[in-house]
Length: 134
Image (cartoon, rainbow, N blue to C red; front, side, top):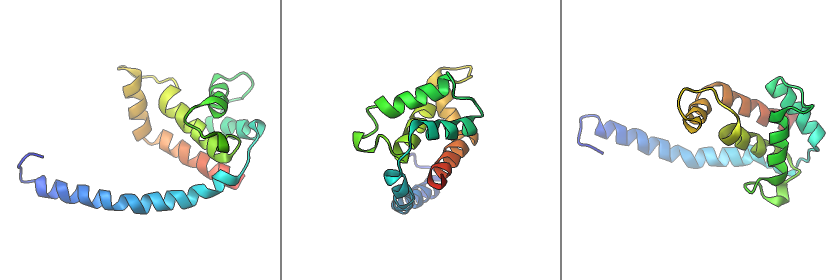
């Protein structure tokens, strides 16, 4: 970090943020536990995606791609494939890495911009809640 008048303040902010990570991780782990044990069949999950994305699942490429990731993604542990956790992970993987974007630059930048905006984090949060409540 450069030697500037704001360096001490920036370091203090970074330190504060790093100290919050264990608290966030612990809270996320506690909130995620029900997703690991709750089982979902594809039809149930498809209906939740339909409501979330306001689409119909019949031959919808978004729903098909998300279900495909749920069954075949190497990032989802086989022990959790049919769980609500796998449903959530397949949606977030699709949204973060595969969902088409409308962006003047490259797709990766567009996806990154979308993920730090408000709509996608809100959609992920709504899905998380819907999977716990259903």
